[in-house]
Image 1 (tube, helix red, strand yellow):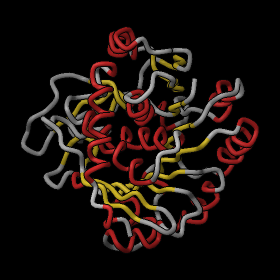
Image 2 (image 1 turned 180 degrees about the horizontal axis):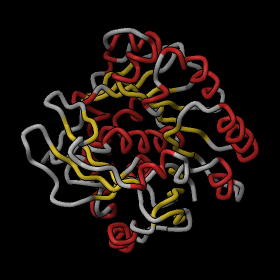
Image 3 (image 1 turned 90 degrees about the horizontal axis):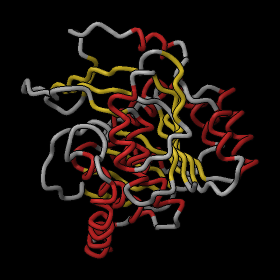
Image 4 (image 1 turned 60 degrees about the vertical axis):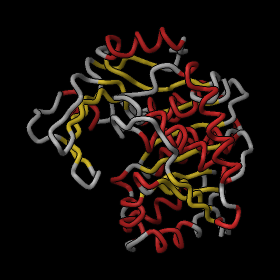
Length: 315
């Protein structure tokens, strides 16, 4: 396979500020959404995640429909991490205080469900992997191990920073992890706390100092910036016929950006393809349900948006 989406799985329930909600749990989590962002464009991708035994009821119909390779999914304990999200009027979100935590959450807290560098390396060592996605913290030992695997196997690395690591006191640790990273993803709330600045322009100025080729700087519903050390493209959100649930749009766009980067697209197209994937994700609760049904549409939309982009706007 060409790509690996590694990391955590969630089973999500969503409640919005107006009181509306999902009527059941839906499959999600950073690696699942990132997998969907890559799978939108290519079948050659594997999800490498540790799951609970309860994943099967929700995951298996989706797996069978899309003929998903399950070699990277390992049952580690009773329950997946169940996530109960409540969206605020401004689009931010947090955990639902009305819901008692599942024991899977404390299993997750103690690391049972974390994907290890060695688990990723089981698949990259076979050769031919172009890119790996991972949402991860800044632990030094983890990154040392992953760096050695990357040097051995030669893939490109997309890192989506986990929010608890995005504080100024961890900036030296972030820079240490960056030694292994080719393309980086962060949202505006995380960037503001990481650099202790306010506003998009100040964040972009700091992100341009990062030792990576491209940063996907996500600014919520309005879209994203594709940031390189010497150029910045603002890419508005892609048009979409309906907006149901934004959960996982950041992960989906990040996985898509890895694909575009590793395939050699320029920074503008990387941002556009990321937004096209996000637009597909927001059309329903949970992940994209049928990749084959929307792939041609996604490629066509990305091409149209790229050709229509005002060429004077990269700065």
